[in-house]
Image (cartoon, rainbow, N blue to C red; front, side, top):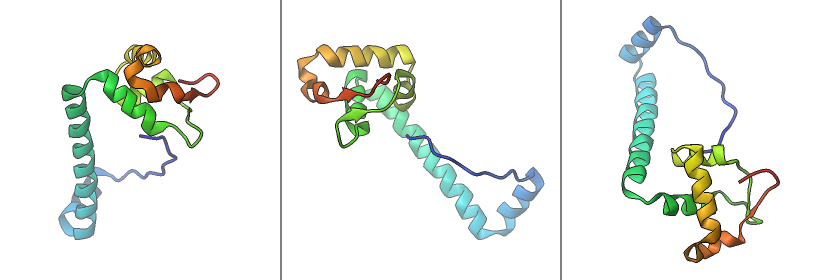
Length: 115
């Protein structure tokens, strides 16, 4: 989950209701977007429920590294990525530094002032 610029418009409720009822394309767009958000939510719930936090953290760190094995995110940004509190993300970071099982994480170089 990376932050990007976004443009948006506000549609009055009556206009939205009218568009949903008369425009097949608009209805498909809305339900496709809604479906994607619900699917993403269920995936986060499944990860939180069934995966250990240290493993999720390690996978996320490897996923977010750049080509030079550097991370450019804060503990708060990592917490958002993991769907957890900043304190938990900090603990995961600390445990990754000292756990030999997570050997690949030792090769990651945090950028200045970041994770």
